[in-house]
Length: 565
Image 1 (tube, helix red, strand yellow):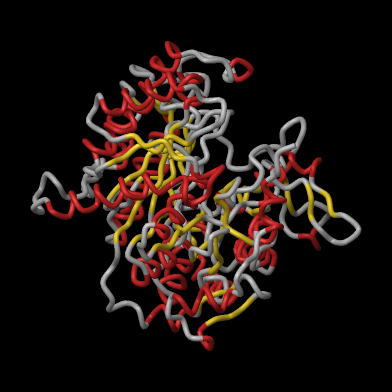
Image 2 (image 1 turned 30 degrees about the vertical axis):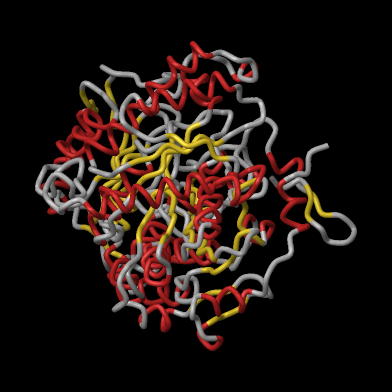
């Protein structure tokens, strides 16, 4: 019987986190340990790194996800270990797993096999309490809104136009829409409300985009929570909420330091979803890692159409980060699925279906290289059932468009299985660095800053997704125009849509074209400084599947957690 992910993690010999920190030059008095194997690095120490040059940034992205799973986080960890094995000073930066998917369909998000960040159980469960702090800060603001209305409503908040929602770190469809304030005058004014999952909250986005504590506090104050009857916006600072929110988040803002199974340092910090929010770990973690290592591998959530697009158009645009290379994770199974094979039939060899499905990979590669100007390499995340013919066909599909594809076996072999991938990444970085810097080789964005919100959304849909047009109801169009007129037109657009397709229909596999992208809802994230366009049937509070992953999770009599994957 194969050893499970959690068994591999529990059998590993971890180094004390002080040893990992020492290798990075982090003094003991700048480390806040949470037990022996995880710690926060003080914001004070991070400030001392700002004058150091940045290392090379490797962006891990992927083809459009499938039910079979592609292993992007596993490949991020494997590549980090592979870089360390070939003598490079490497770090990895990951998002923190959310409890919603841990207990739902996806399970844990700390890698897999022999390419994991550890301690795996801690990372996948409560970790250092960052998500709890984000939830408390979000819900404090919600409580202050209703409390202000209850005690006289001096700001004139229209309870019909409260836009701020409460959050919970559990998938719970029953809480998507709710009514609060029932039970009489002592309980406040009844109004419609609802819950989002923590990773969809604006506070999470702000947390991951903030450059320091002062910036965090400033952004929290900018959050628009409601409107008056004459549509005047009410912000968190109007309620004097941002100071207390920043105080709650002060300790959480320091990045979390852990290690891989092979002791490569890793920051695991922040966690906005890519199909709902902007999908990147914290800027502070990535920027700090770049000051301490020669190579930093970070991931953008889901496929490149969601994660990489937002990494470039939101994070890079607002912070100045720039990927040197992108690694696109693909699997034989994923290509067969995009070629029309059902999940039950994926173990059977089917080269023809795989070749049909590679249109998905090619579209992602084209977007990375031609739209954003990022050199790319393909990592074929190997599975034991992959046949030589299928692997050769996948390599050939990448090489046909001028991209190197490398078979990586890090799941089974750890960093040793990713050494060839690491060498390919270093070669591509060297080649890119040797090219003269000009307009053609510079990082490019999907749309210019001065485009209207409507044109920004249209550019993403037509250029990245292959759509023919975007559509919206009269009410949504009016809302977009109002945001434009109110001065938010300079913000980037953050698209919330299904991760399973370039379209808004999760059933459209491959690389669909000539489809329409319908904007169902628009939300202003003034503190995060982007506008969210919710498309298709995507939910900001997911539900649990018929058989949740929680059903398999347990703890034995010795306190060991089992069933977590």
